[in-house]
Length: 251
Image 1: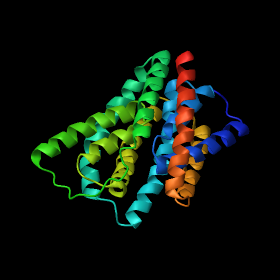
Image 2: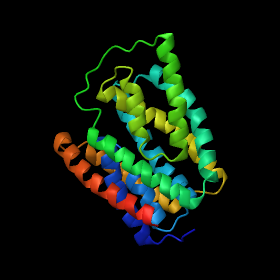
Image 3: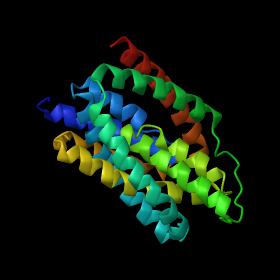
Image 4: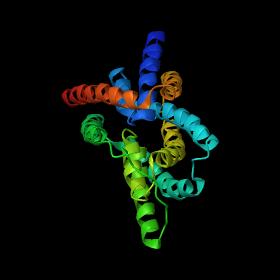
């Protein structure tokens, strides 16, 4: 494990700002931070665990904001969070068992797949509908979020897009979906982080530096022109994802 220097932490905080803006405007900030932690010398499992500190902090701030504006459906969020938490524990345990080289290859493939979802932009122009949980829909929802939890516990990067896909099926709009998304991610990140902490796979100085950047980025994103910021950030992150994915594949 590396011994972090001040410039490691400053650089990581700056990238965290970009990731925080991205998470608010588009999603997928971990696609920048997770490979960067690996490139800085952390083992894959430690990078995976360290990244969870920033995810947890940012989503706690986001939940507070959505709750304050009265757009968070706690009932639906809790229904989704239960199976996601169970899946997250399993996913985090799996991540600790995966070979370092295999994890890098899986992460690169995931990054390119999520890039396609980012460019597709499934949230665009979505209108709200009434949410009615029939027994069939509830069963699909519970199964979907168990699998979301497994994936999120395993790698985190891009999990927001899977949550969006599952919630779009329920007829939610952009604001409602994001409010529930950050709540679910917060809950299962607590579980995943605890697993990584128990196995000593968290670098706290780097994790806290990244968390500070993420929190600042989320705050700044709220003060940007969303339409302009969304298009701009999507171009930047698309290029970065391609470069990072290729570097991971090439070792």
